[in-house]
Length: 355
Image (cartoon, rainbow, N blue to C red; front, side, top):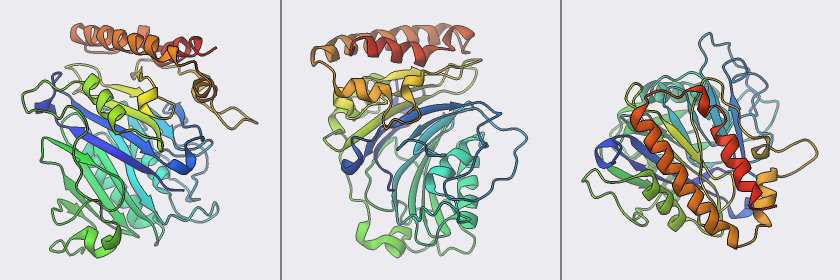
């Protein structure tokens, strides 16, 4: 299994809402027909079950709630997720992972879930990912993680059991899939790592990610960029091999509410984004999960057989949802129980246009 994604990061100084905005387009032309699940985990079950890499996990006394996106059904971990403390983690590229179920390792998707269940900010998440890589990563694995919170974004690249991480200083950045990203700017790393050499060149010279231009409206540095702009950026960046997309608007606690937007369907250009917030008791729709004896989510199946006219109506609903939530967030700095079924309601509203 590989996890490839075209990722876009906009730091708070560039955004209209003063939040960090992160967007991700999953890419895998060979798996476009494979449904991406969206799953919610409470503190009681976020670390339950067996990891896909086979490593056993130590219990955690103060686990966090997590929303997780999975690149294929029935995985334990995910390729993107966020937790209730405003930490979002994405895989942008993986290669060479061993998927033996009974080994004593963690896959990159396992590491995403483990870290989200524990990390209270981006720097703590980097430390936790690094510890997981050093102890549990397969020797042949190469991985890129993007880690964000409301104030900072990091990129961590790993090869085998060594890793290096860079804290983003640019006001915005596109991180394409295709190779290790961290080069000579290294702010955290494995013990004893030579930080004078390019990490990517040392471990992945052939596949090093190229420079890439922004898609669509690039942040202008004047504090006007919005999550709707990110939606359009991901739509322009999508293509035939584009899978589920997501956008996280990460806001410092006490000033507003972080919100995570998912398509749950392939190709952002032909999909709509639905919101999730960590309300008191979130409930998400079973339509975003693959049920026993099936291969796709019902949302995915219905979307695949949609009528073209449905998209125009759904885009109008998406814009209305953005406006209503932005208004709600402007007057309330915590998510009340009236948002418990926000994602569920939006998914079920969408499928009515497909039936």
